[in-house]
Length: 477
Ligand code: 5AD
Ligand code: SF4
Image (cartoon, rainbow, N blue to C red; front, side):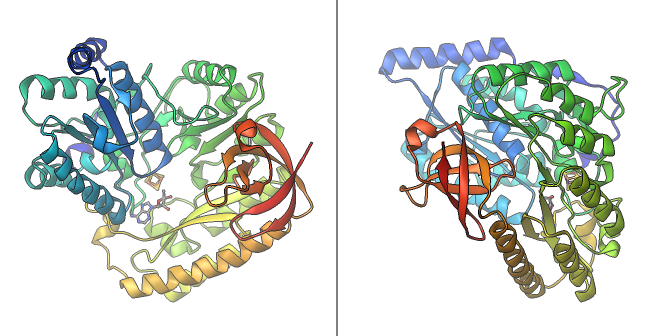
């Protein structure tokens, strides 16, 4: 990843996929469709975070424009794209194992093309591994060059040569990207790319490059169009949305962007993730408190409750600062839902450091936590520190979950008797007798109703029962 660490000039280029390349691939696929009577299909598999899901929707969009249908069965595909994650070792292992399974598909169908993209392959050692140990992988490119996908695919189709793109274009801001969205009512909107924070455990700044933001006009236009075409729930995405437009001379920041989006007319909810406590401002909390459309939900990764560990993580805040933000949020927005990310077993975490994290959980009482066992990432500073034995990490992780489950259950019980607004996602996957949906605070609610008619609609549900991970209730007319 050495190429990522070089100092680059602060340029920023808006870029779209090459229309000529898209047209040329489409011509090849049109001919194939004419000859065989079947249009070639593309299968896109996604690992990792919402940013990757958003990227995959653009991959699917480019595939559609290049003349593919989009399929959800890899066996029927003429093109398989695996969009990978690198945040923890487990994510990389899963992606490599799936790519390994596609060897058999390629053996059955030698004309099948397999592309691997995303965060994992932005690392040189993983590109090398794919090049040498996965000879049936045809082309590879990292997250910063998503717009080059049509050109890489066309090159492979024409020349037959495998392509392992090592380009890092972390000055690029993609615009006018084709898109096929998974949902007709929930949408992701990337507002910025990359990260400058270099938290000592995190691979993201190396694989996604430096921070760069989209212009407010472009984002407002995209959100307006989404609202006008019936989208009800719009999540603004960035690794650290609070530093949106930082360092620019645009004269506006994230809170101003949010206020501009909140002013759009229509029936919709705005969310954003992820925030960094060091940049969460009173201005932002004020815009949220006054907002018409902004969900009363704040996802504020704390990572650890120990000041010593936060320092080693390079997080630039301490317990006191974190608690001050929580206090301000709860004073200004009393019904705010608070969620967080926690890393357990960071190098050097003592029993007392871990107790400090549990203490913060008891003090803040998060509605929900995303907790992770620390995973050493090659090339990051924390990977060089003295590691905690896995059995200690595992035992602490279990203790953290047990405490959080108690807190979440109590917080959910407190909602019994309340009537909450829910965006319906259709029939519950676990129990078809129920409709499932999410509150403004992103809590899952199960209720009886006509799943078909209610999917994508806001409904009001009176909560009558609470489980640790779901609320149950009845529809209110
Ligand atoms: N190990 C474990 N968890 C990690 N995260 C980021 N890097 C690592 C790592 N090396 C977690 C952080 C972050 C979330 C998206 O993933 O909690 O907020
Ligand atoms: Fe990783 Fe920290 Fe950037 Fe989040 S803010 S992406 S945890 S480096």
